[in-house]
Length: 74
Image (cartoon, rainbow, N blue to C red; front, top):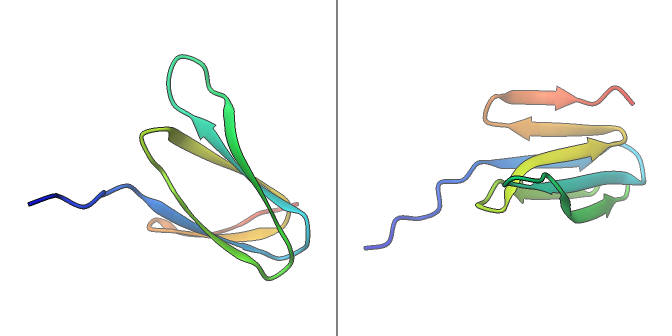
Protein backbone atom coordinates (compact mmCIF):
# COMPACT_ATOMS: atom_id res chain seq x y z
CA UNK A 1 0.00 0.00 0.00
CA UNK A 2 1.27 3.48 -0.91
CA UNK A 3 1.61 6.10 1.81
CA UNK A 4 0.08 9.41 0.68
CA UNK A 5 2.32 12.47 0.49
CA UNK A 6 2.51 14.04 3.95
CA UNK A 7 3.88 17.40 2.78
CA UNK A 8 2.57 20.60 4.37
CA UNK A 9 0.12 22.86 2.57
CA UNK A 10 -0.62 26.57 2.92
CA UNK A 11 -3.59 28.56 1.69
CA UNK A 12 -3.02 32.09 0.37
CA UNK A 13 -5.98 34.46 -0.12
CA UNK A 14 -5.21 37.73 -1.88
CA UNK A 15 -6.56 40.88 -0.21
CA UNK A 16 -5.56 42.99 -3.24
CA UNK A 17 -4.82 42.36 -6.90
CA UNK A 18 -1.24 41.60 -7.88
CA UNK A 19 -0.21 39.37 -4.94
CA UNK A 20 2.80 37.25 -5.94
CA UNK A 21 3.34 33.75 -4.55
CA UNK A 22 6.83 32.45 -5.33
CA UNK A 23 8.09 28.88 -4.82
CA UNK A 24 11.77 28.50 -3.86
CA UNK A 25 13.84 25.37 -4.49
CA UNK A 26 15.71 23.07 -2.14
CA UNK A 27 19.38 22.19 -2.48
CA UNK A 28 22.74 23.92 -2.60
CA UNK A 29 21.36 27.04 -4.33
CA UNK A 30 17.96 28.47 -3.46
CA UNK A 31 16.23 29.60 -6.65
CA UNK A 32 12.79 30.72 -7.78
CA UNK A 33 11.07 27.84 -9.57
CA UNK A 34 7.43 28.90 -9.80
CA UNK A 35 5.47 32.16 -9.56
CA UNK A 36 1.75 32.82 -9.40
CA UNK A 37 0.02 36.22 -9.46
CA UNK A 38 -3.31 36.43 -7.64
CA UNK A 39 -6.12 38.94 -8.07
CA UNK A 40 -8.14 40.23 -5.11
CA UNK A 41 -10.19 37.42 -3.57
CA UNK A 42 -8.37 34.60 -5.38
CA UNK A 43 -7.15 31.66 -3.32
CA UNK A 44 -4.10 29.48 -3.96
CA UNK A 45 -3.37 26.22 -2.16
CA UNK A 46 0.37 25.55 -2.24
CA UNK A 47 2.30 22.46 -1.14
CA UNK A 48 5.83 22.07 0.17
CA UNK A 49 7.44 19.25 -1.86
CA UNK A 50 10.77 17.60 -2.55
CA UNK A 51 11.52 20.59 -4.81
CA UNK A 52 9.87 23.41 -2.83
CA UNK A 53 11.47 24.36 0.49
CA UNK A 54 10.04 27.86 0.91
CA UNK A 55 7.23 30.03 -0.37
CA UNK A 56 7.56 33.82 -0.59
CA UNK A 57 4.49 36.07 -0.69
CA UNK A 58 4.50 39.70 -1.89
CA UNK A 59 1.42 41.87 -1.41
CA UNK A 60 -1.53 41.95 0.97
CA UNK A 61 -2.73 38.44 1.70
CA UNK A 62 -4.05 36.12 4.37
CA UNK A 63 -2.00 32.94 4.77
CA UNK A 64 -3.47 29.90 6.50
CA UNK A 65 -1.10 27.19 7.78
CA UNK A 66 -1.32 24.36 10.26
CA UNK A 67 0.44 26.74 12.67
CA UNK A 68 -2.17 29.48 12.39
CA UNK A 69 -3.20 32.46 10.29
CA UNK A 70 -0.74 35.14 9.13
CA UNK A 71 -1.66 38.52 7.65
CA UNK A 72 0.97 40.23 5.51
CA UNK A 73 1.80 43.85 6.40
CA UNK A 74 2.24 45.28 2.89
